[in-house]
Length: 627
Image 1 (cartoon, rainbow, N blue to C red):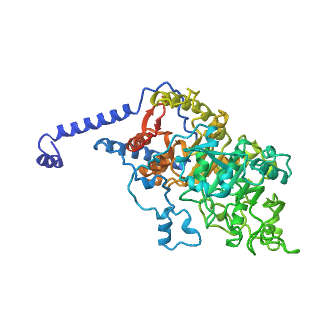
Image 2 (image 1 turned 120 degrees about the horizontal axis):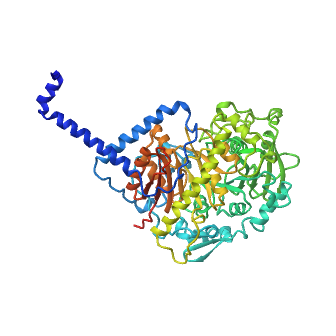
Image 3 (image 1 turned 90 degrees about the horizontal axis):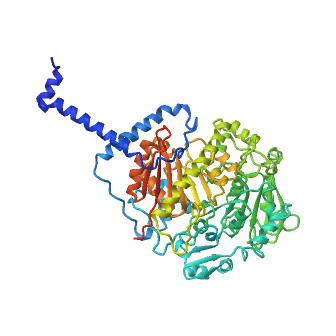
């Protein structure tokens, strides 16, 4: 006998409710089968394309959350496939060709930000705007391949005019216009003194080296170049196998960061105003400022304290600025036996002035962590809560890093990406999640995966796109991809694979805020890296990168409740036309990613690695939209 609730339903829906119920279940099963079958493609010959998830990539307490994420993606996808076809997003208006979110001076002034903070990054003021795709300028052209692109760029790719070049005084000594639409940079002429090579040679001699080719032997590998101009100094350091990272303030036109990235040099937006840079303590071997425009005697010396935080023990601060300055400035000439303010302050933080030649001053940070407590007017040591603030935390007036197990003098460190067991042991102790086996396993996995990535991309480039005039058919496109971003870098294994594979690419290794902070380990390998919250835009100009890579990022971000569409719009903004995106994640996350990729007009294909897991690869290419 049927229950009362069933009889009531029968009265409402009719006697055929049982048949309707079975029909609904049958339709749901068909939709699920279609979903699973669509995730596979004809590219099944890549047996190990996706690196298997490393043990403990997520800590054990997140296992239940991971399963919830998978279920969440599956439910969202099943809901979306029942809706009408999603419309492609429109192109933004011309005024947003060089749009950089979070840098809105007028909005900052409205809330009465001052003392330079109106020019700083303020993502909390980001307004909801129309979702659209940032278009390239009408004159934009695909950058030349490396290394030719280091010395010659297309003038239409950067927001700077010929009049600005010709009226810039000394800038014209560093470059010349070869043709109407090209700019050529000269590394040998006119940076400072007799040229950039002479300049770096003098720096090397000032710290006791025979030549600038000895920087690596002295432990100098990671250099923070503040206000890098047109990148001539950084380009020369790259030729010496060093890794310079340029940071400069946001500029509406004539951007130093945009020029550096266009030349294939590591760069990002960053300010010395009121907050720390998004790097941990003890990150760089040298900090360089050549007429970078920073008021070093401002904020009671807190900018110099920030440089001290960033420098490794024994690291160098190079400051090049005109000697003749207004009375009372840091670099005023000594009067009798009186110390200048900068010399007095640097002595308080245990720096020693190694050399002064004309306009250039070179200080060295102490390698003795006990020195700070011996100075009568020294600064206090930072507490643990200040040590952990490295993502745009407020500037602090205390000395960082002295309690870190990474406090290791430059000359005692190993150069290159191959860390010694002792150095790796430091990270294992300081960061409990870093395991030796996991670190080396990730490296080996990415070596094989990178080969498969390249073999996958190569035929797509030359089958889907016509050969450009004057181009020969090259080998796999190791010189067509220069600026690479790993959006979820883990230990930097993808970067290490590119180095081992002798690819002429550099990688911006991004460690998402909220994950394990492995950035110190990445930086200690001599790689570029930064902390970043992917719920916010990345601090760079449009069309900065040739390739974006991410493994497991979308599963993590779903826990952070970020907008996936906003993230894909940001990825499209910072990716160059004809640039590549390689994503690996579980099947639910990848299907959602493919849906968003279609909305922003990317060519996208899903690859099943056939390794018995639920992982999939999404390979996308951004089209060159000219209208």
